[in-house]
Length: 212
Figure 1 (spheres, rainbow, N blue to C red):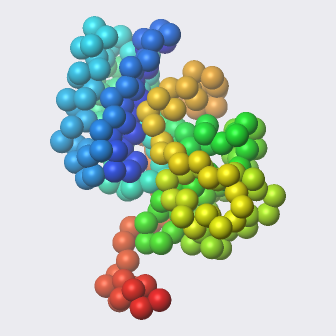
Figure 2: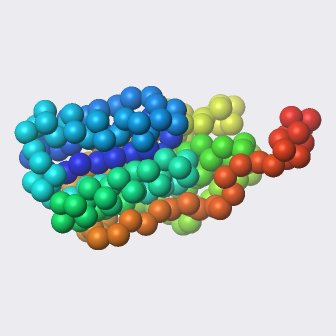
C-alpha cells in the first residue's frame, strides 16, 4: 500500500511515506511552525518516491490527544489533500503510537498535556484499556504497572518503573494501520481526540502554580 502519514501533535513535525515495503520519513523540530513546513515536507517525500497524491491509498494523521493547534493542522492538511485526490483519511490515536514502544505493548502511555498534566491510558498487548484520562501524573494509579512510555517521564522517575522516552511518529501510524487496518477505519472526514477543552491556564492559575 502507498500511505502518507502526518503528525503535528507536539513540537515536532513528523511525516512518513510508505510505498509497498519501502518506508521513508521526514522529521523536524518546528515548535509552532508546523504550517510553515508541512506542505514542503510532503512534497519532498512524494517527489523522492515519484508518487502523486492520487496514487496514495490513504492519508493517516495523528488525531490526538496532543497540542490542539497541531492536531487541527494535521487533520486539516490530511482532509484537504485527501479530498483533492479523492482518497480516504485515517485518524490514529497518538497514545496508540506511544504504546508501540511499551514492552510487548504492556504498560502506561503518556503524552504531555501541558499545564502540569498528562494524557494517560493503560495498554495490554498493545490494546487500550479503559478511557484516556487527563490530569496530574501524581494522581494516576500505578498499581500493577512495570513500564511507562511517553514524552513526560519526570513524574515517574522514583516509582521503580521502566521508563521509555517516546513521541508519536508518523511511521508509527503506518505500522499500526498496516498491522490492523480494521482497527482504524478509513473515512471521508477528520475527527480529533481532544479529551479536554481547556488549552491554557489563566493568569491567576499561573501565579498560583508558581507559588505552589
